[in-house]
Each structure stands twice: as C-alpha cells, then as structure tokens.
Image 1 (cartoon, rainbow, N blue to C red):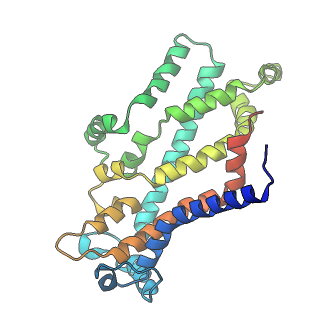
Image 2: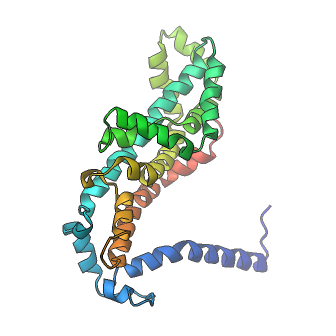
Image 3: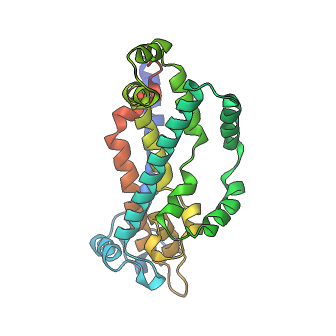
Amino acid sequence: MVEKRPLVTIATHVVLVLGVILVLLPVWVAFVASTHTSFRLNTGLAPLWPGTAMLDNYALIFSEGARRNGLPPVGPMMFNSLVMALGITFGKIVISILSAFAIVYFRFRFRMAAFWVIFITLMLPVEVRIVPTFQVVAGFGLLNSYTGLILPLIASATATFLYRQIFLQIPDELLEAARIDGAGPLKFLWDIVVPLTRTSTAALFVILFVYGWNQYLWPLLVTTQPDFYTIVRGIKGIATAADSEPVWNLVMAVAMLAMLPPIAVVIFMQKLFVRGLTETEK
C-alpha cells in the first residue's frame, strides 16, 4: 500500500534527503581534504570547501607516490587491487557454480553432508581462520604474490548456497530434455544452467568485486613488498607515516581514487544487479 497524502510524500522525501546527506558527507569531506595542501589540513580546522591544490595532489600520487613512506605510485597499487578483485570474483563464481552443480545434480554418497560442511564454514569468522591460513600460504612460499593474495579467498560458502537454491528452482523437465538430446553434464551446465543464472551471477559479480577490492586485512598480512601492495593497503601505509607529518591530503586523494572502480562497476551493472536480486522465477 502506497500513501499518496502530501505530508507523507514530503516526510519521505525529507528522510531520503537526510539519508543521502549522511551517506555522502564523509565522501565530500574526503574530496575537500584531497584538494588542500598538507599544511592547511594540519592547522586543525577542517575546510568545508575545495581548495586549489587538487591537481598537484593527484599528480603527486600518480607520479612520485608516497616515496618517503616506501610506497609506490597509485597506478601499480590500483592494478594489484584490480587483479586481486577480479581473481577473487571469478574464482568464487566458478568454484561455487561447480560445487552447487555437483550437489544438486549428482547423486553420490554424503552429498548433503558435504553441503552442510560447506555451509557450516559460514559460521567461522575470518579472524579465526586467518592465522592458520597465513601459515599455509607462507609454507607454500606464496607471500608477496598474486596467488597468495587470491587463492585463500576464492572459496565461498555463501555463493555456493545461493547457486544451490537457484539450481533447485530449475525445472526437472529441462534436465530430462537435455538427457534425451544426448547432452552430457558439462554441456547441460554450460548451455542451460549457466544462461539461466546470468542475472544472479551478475548481481553476485558486483558484490564479490566490491568485497575483493575492499580487502584490507589479508593483503596487510601477506604483502611486505611495495610491488604487491593493494590500494587499500597503500592508504594504511600513507596514513601511518613514520617520522614525518601526516599527509592527509594525499591519503584522501588515494581514498577518492580507491572508491572509483567499485562505483563504476555498480553503475555499469546496475540493471543486472537489481534484476539478479529481485528475480524469483527462472
């Protein structure tokens, strides 16, 4: 039921505007800080309007970076974040589709036990698993590598559960028709199951890309060489400068750039993202 009274309409718009302001205020503060000099920000009074050092700040982080803190320029760090985010996203999607497909369409012993073991891992906090995971990665010599950044994070119980629920909604008649046509399991998966889950996969891609891009704790543990720093890891390095004044203008400039790729992915995939979250019938 939708109320069409003027006062209700005004109240909802006021709440909506207040919500938008609350969400955008930290972004505005970060943008304004990225346009001022370090001396201006260290005076203790936070400016509310953009300054005149915007081009100099952004040119600095793209050219020399924060070299005095042992960090590379922003470009390589954003490339590392992109590789890590895409690796985690595609890895999670592929593994989740295959594991859910096996659970739903293959009849083997302990099939449901395997599913519940995967599902139970949802209840294990990342902090509980991160130390033994680090020891395993270090034992295989994967520190300071893309494999070490991506491999421990490409299994997802949540995505496996979601794909299982989607596959259970696919009519059995499609499976029978594929068998009559002589299609094997892989052909049935590729030609029928994967196209039917296109919108759900797109929605999951957006969520997983943002998850992979914003990873902070794991890159902080497994990367000690600046060549493999991610952009979020780089923000932490610049903000904790040793024996030097905080360069908050550069920190905020890097933070602004770090927000752009996830925002671009959400904007370009907005329609598929909404359809993937709202569609119930396949």
